[in-house]
Amino acid sequence: MQPRRPTRQIVLGDERTGLVRVGGDAPVSVQTMTAGYTHEIDKCVAEIHKLTAAGADVVRVAVPEKKDTEALPEILAQTTVPIVADVHFHFKRALEAVEAGVHKIRLNPGNISDRDQVREVINACKSGANGPNGRIPIRVGVNEGSIIERKDKQKRAKELGAFFSDHKHGYMLAIMIAKLEEYLEIFYAEDFEDIAISAKSMDATLVIDAYTEISKRFDHPLHLGVTHAGPKETGCIRSVVALGTLLANGIGDTIRISYASDPVYEVEDGLELLYSLGLRERKGAELIACPTCGRIQVDLFTLTQDVRRTLADNIEVPMKVAVMGCVVNGPGEAEGADVAVFAGDRKGIIYVQGERVATVPETEILDRLLAECKTFQDRVRSGEAKLGEKKVDIVPPDPEGELGSGWEKMAAERIAGGTDLTVGNT
Ligand code: SF4
Image (cartoon, rainbow, N blue to C red; front, side, top):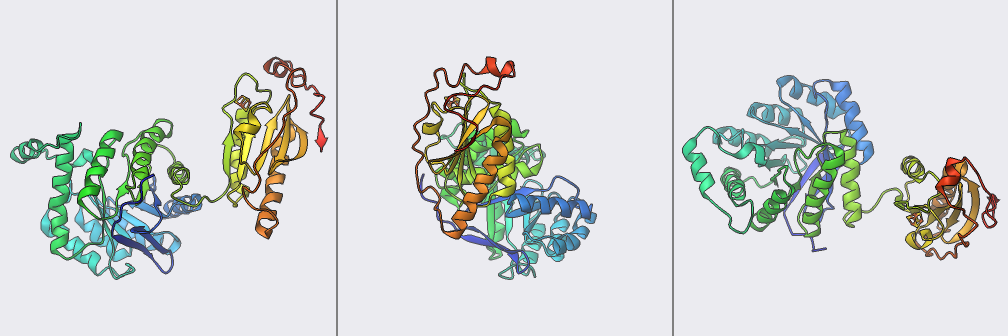
């Protein structure tokens, strides 16, 4: 991991929402965007609450029409997270959103480029009543899809004439940087520097190249994202490879993962990415689960999903919980877990910080594991136990003859009692 790149800092929020700092020494924040219509106030508020509960630090809403900006005061009054207005094409939506009290504006140089209009928005943000410093920050987003000149052929030829030879995406990078320099000039001329920058693309390698180049040229905080990444199943890989690479290189101050799926997944996966890189302090349990193999003798995929949901609803302490398919390799693979279950033949052996506490039938694993996690959480909170204090050090029972051959037994609905896996508390 490279040290975080030093940047300026912008501040979003107010007394009601609390302040979210982006850039400088602030932790990397997670943003998302509502998927519903902003003018449907009740639904929009409910979605923002859901995203806030999932852990979003900042939520963006689209304001394509006046009825959307008119809905903002009520939405702001009912929500507790900084709200960003996403503005395209109509600079007046930005002015209305500032008037309504939003905490940040996003502008796209690709579709709001008139200097006078941009200047008007900047000046509105300079005296934004809802900004913590009397100013509302602005994100300048040069997305690949909307920055190439399409009408003016001469300008387009000039833009495409520039080239960054270091990169496969040399032309596009040159255009992105040129647009940014040109656009930011308007902001600097107005003495406005509460700026964040984004340069998104659906191509993960272009995202890596673009932010890398931008980070060398500007010291404004960077909002990372892979745009139009697709559904969660594939968008997850594309986003994590780009954002993970940049973050590991010290680049990036706030992130938005974009899926064609429920935005709650964007928040959950964004947080997990930051936890995995050690850039945010984990809230809740960290789940370790084995990928399964031919030794498996329980339905581990279902069990793992059930455990994940149950822990998310019940555990707030950042304990490590391991769900392992067998006692052969499981103990080694779960090294360092606070609470662990190792499956046997339709049974589970449960350990808390290395101590075997129970052996239960497969149908009772979930409940007993949760009970042990809750008890352990209470002990951590009372100071009786410390997270990660003892490494798992388990000598497993001999699997030969005791645990049977696995899938055949499950298929035959046989629940066998191994000599070393007596059901009940131990
Ligand atoms: S823990 Fe056991 S079942 Fe799971 S992958 Fe490792 S060896 Fe296979």
